[in-house]
Amino acid sequence: MKIESIQDLEKIRRQYSSGLYNPGVVKVNVGMASCGIAAGAQAVYDKAAEAFKDDRSVRICQTGCIGFCEVEPLVEIFADGKPRVIYKNITEDKILDAVEDYRNGVSRKKWILGQIRDPRCLLEDDLDNPVDKIEPYEDIPFLEDIPFYKNQVKIALRNCGYIDPDCIEEYMARKGYFAFLDVLKNKEPGQVIDMVKASGLRGRGGGGFPTGIKWATCAKHDGERYIICNADEGDPGAYMDRSILEGDPHSVLEGMLIAAFAIGSSQGFIYVRNEYPLAVKRLVTAIKQAESYGLLGDDIAGSGFSFNIKISTGAGAFVCGESTALMASLEGQVGRPRAKYVHTVEKGFRNSPSNLNNVETYANVPPIVLKGADWYTSLGTEHSKGTKVFSLVGKVKNTGLVEVPMGISLRDIVFSIGGGVPKKKQFKAVQTGGPSGGCIPEKYMDLPVDYQRLAEVGSIMGSGGMIVMDQDTCMVDVARYFLDFLKEESCGQCNPCREGIKQMLDILTRICRGEGRQGDIELLEELGSMVQKFSLCGLGTSAPNPVLTTILYFRDEYEAHIRDKKCPAGVCKKLFYYEIDSEACTGCHVCARKCPQEAISGEKKKPHTIDQEKCIKCGICYDACKFNAIAIR
Image 1 (cartoon, rainbow, N blue to C red):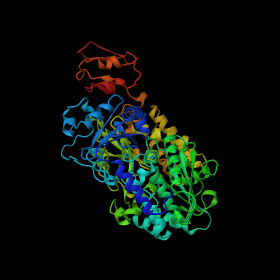
Image 2 (image 1 turned 30 degrees about the horizontal axis):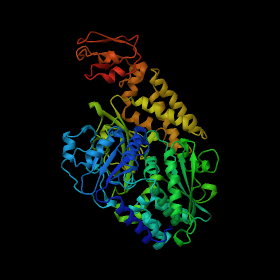
Image 3 (image 1 turned 120 degrees about the vertical axis):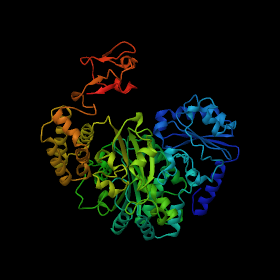
């Protein structure tokens, strides 16, 4: 059928939402984003689907990233009138037992007390907040009882982990495309732009430019206007956009449709990196489904408004995340940035007015239209409204995808949601903003996370990468690693970026090899300032951030490398060695068994020693020792 009105959408919503949650039907959601599939979710899904294919009382469903990537595969089981049970690390041999035990009425308390086959599977551990019944479909608090999710507010991720991303009807069941049809039938383009302006939504791709102002400026210029979605996510450790595309592609399509109506565009492009095959596959499916319902194409819902979307896959160049480089690549040219004095909203793709936002920005638009600008501005801070999605990775217990209100502290993200640093090690720093972000030390952990406050301490919001570092992280080596990445990804077009980053990297490499000289720190600061001021695009202007912030907050580590020829963290191999503390060593022999070079010797229950000639400083013994008996010297 072709959808012509909100009433048509409402019929599908009621029909499909009621059909999903019939009394007596057990629904099993298997997290099937890239993270889940990599952990074995496909085998779990196939096993359950085959076992229950003829059983109408059980429904096996795929869904997107549920967020808690550390404990994938994740499976949620629930039914009308029964508590929801969330499992972690579910494997092919466990899934059938989990479903059968749930069907047999095992209570959540019994699961926690271990009265099942494998109580270690259970993720839920909060008995103070029982959930006795299922709420209406669009408001199901799937995971809110779990500490990892308690402080999260899901807007961009509102459907990820809740719906089948390959089923447009499930998206409609959660009021998908209602915002677009409301705009199309009841609002003028200027009203939509004013609403987005009033919401305070800022670009989530890193620049943080006000979205409504960008739309308004683009709409003022004559010519064929284009809507472009930047899905070229290239930050190491970042996967926010990928997860949205894999778990809820229709939210991005709907956001682009609303933007197209607002600025008067008939053509859209999604530029997605080719390393995201599952995201591309689900986008292709979503576009075909939207076209089949008449929500994409010509004369949508008889309104006279037409809009088509094409997908373009990029080769994975980090610099193509910059808007002008992305548009050049989209045109088939070399992905190189251009000077910013000509704005893309005036002359962008094909030298025409072009509006570019990233995946997360577009995903925020439909709920703003549905719930209003005032609702959105109630979240966040004065200058940073709404929520932000972060990929929380590194030396933290609970790695995964989190969405939190702007203004939440770094401490709440890392320790309350992330669970802190594992193995009782000391927190050292957190980097925000990807390879161009700054490293923020422990003394600023109570800093509210928003665009202004992060900039005050030398970092950036970026697209949302957040890397946690502990006592075993060498901050000099971290700066060297990110500069090495940025040197390879620089387009080489301008001298300050091309030569400046190379010279800074050469100095850092020398320091890490024990060849640092007095004056190197000051030279790094001077070069960093030059690269920031004179580079052509954002890659160059932000590239020195990791170096300058690590010098600012961890200067003592640089001095130890240069003056004392030592790496306090035990990372730079030429500047340290491992030694066993005879008083702490229990002679358990674990380190000796795991040493690949057989460099550790000693009798059981007596202190061991390390043969420095054989030791290759791989760190296996250091990680294996449970008694902290192996010291870095």
